Image (cartoon, rainbow over the protein chains, first blue to last red):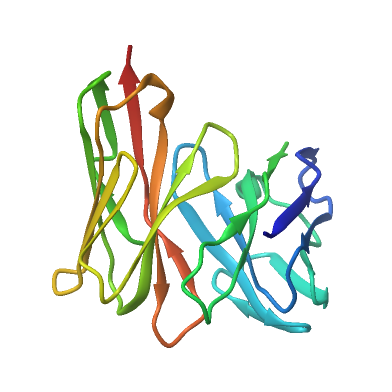
Length: 113
Length: 111
């Protein structure tokens, strides 16, 4: 089965600083990859998804961006963080063409101060 | 918003009772899945129901799907304190690669 590695687990960053969160996938090839953000006590908001290398679809542009430099690597970035970027960020891998489950990383809790 | 809605938002029951939570969604789907999230952790898959299925069972879990009403329900029977968590439905949207989650139900099972 798939394993999603996400790091770091926690991150405290000052407003205006850059951000780079990395997600890597093991146990599969050519997955669809997703970045979600979860505010405290809330649901998951889809931020970006990617169906292949270099292919990024944005749901919530704001000041975040995503890249997929390799098949099993998905990166979430920001040039200048805002207070509103605080939250719990989850990376997920999902095979769209099959009726199978999504696999999630353990998440990164980002606090912008 | 494309996000699905779940109700109730929060549910508190006694151990041994059944817990029912509902999910509504907005688009045509390929399948609907339920996930569980313990506080501050990633999501764990519970059960998947395809769009052409109406009911599915897995252990103490029972899921129903009504595509005409765009709704699903998750029933947890004989609940345990360890079932305390947030539960989310997620839909695989037909014609896109989007994977949309509901707002979640926070379940608390009292021992």
